[in-house]
Image (cartoon, rainbow, N blue to C red):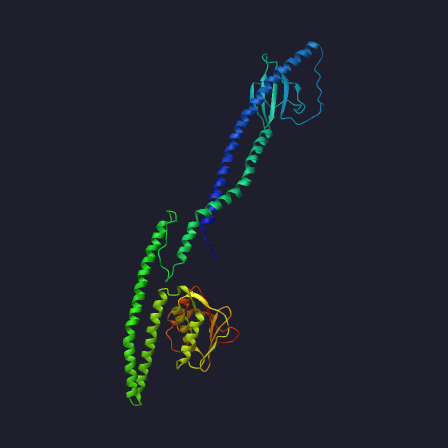
Amino acid sequence: MKRERSLARYLMLSLTGALIAFWLIAIAISIQVMREEYDEVFDSALQETSERLLSLVAADLQLRAGAGHGLSIDFNAAKQGEYLTYQARSMDGNIILRSHDAPETPFDAPLSVGFHDTERHRIYTAVADDFTLFVQVADRFSHRREAVRESAVTMLIPLLLLVPGSYITIWLIVGRATKPIGTLRGAIATKDGGNLAPIKDADLPKELKPIVRSVNLLLGRLRAALDVEREFTANSAHELRTPIAGALAHSQVLIRELPDGPARNRARTLESALSALGRLAEKLLQLSRADSGIGTKDSEVDLLGVLDLIVRDFERSGNARGQIEYDDTSGGALTRAVDADAFAIVIRNIIENALIHREPGTPVEISVDDNGVIRIVNECPVIPPAEIVDIKKRFHRGKTEASGSGLGLPIAERIVAQMGGTLLLRSPATGRTSGFEARITL
């Protein structure tokens, strides 16, 4: 699965990588500059040392010659590492004096004033005025490379602290800079059919305001389209109720007047169709109200009293009389800041759905637990999980021959969501091997 690209992560890695790259480039340039400067300093020290040593060696040789004894040099002196080595050579190139680290063979450098490079040394030759004495001082290239290397390591050590420190700093800066994006994303995520109010852009940076304006424009168009749809649905359903009721009354009169036979049977069929059409018109009105957002209310309502009233209303009706088992002995309280009429629509739709789709001869069980969770259970074959997802869709009736509009459960779920609750549908019912359960938590 392809990993989603993160803008914040991209910025943090890019900025940290760029900072490290610039730091390394700066170190590389600094090393090059230091190498050139070190060469100048070492060359100057090498030349100065050679010239001073020349005068000292010349004076020492004169003193020894005046004293009347030969030159005696102890080559077994205690040895220690030296940065510079030297050789004093005569005009014919022989070594007459050398440091204890200097080779016993002459340096591979001509007897002429100036610098000369060998494979391992940088050599400067100083010459006496009479060209009888030459002093050659050698500086190892390894010493110079060591000095440059130590300087480079000294500059690289802060980078080890700079990388995590800069990453954390950039993470904090990027997190703060992208916080308005998260705020805008959260504001957009709250928008649905019941909340299409414009998004406020007062606290957002100017880079995001064009996006907010575009989203608000889209929300306005969507709000206008939904308002037209809801108005059309509500007006159509409202206007159809009266003619449907009139046609239903005429069909009932016709049934009473017609004798038994095919004509009376067709009249009964007409009555059933008109009744179904009337129920559909009622559901369309409820759907229009649900889409308009009727779930919440400022004041709290005792929902158990509303539930008792609806259950008694069903028990008094002819189709549901004796078909409902209501357990109202939990003793719990169910007081919420919701609209009582909206809650009644939810309960009525779920009970109607249970009565329609239950196994013949089995009751619909309604109960409220101590936590205020309402359970409505009816007996039926087990419904697959995929089909439970589908029956939440509008006008989806599932695999059944029972009558229904396919709107009851979607309307109930819509209103419960507006109330801030959940409507859980499951099959089989809790503690059973079959059945269907609707659980409302507010």
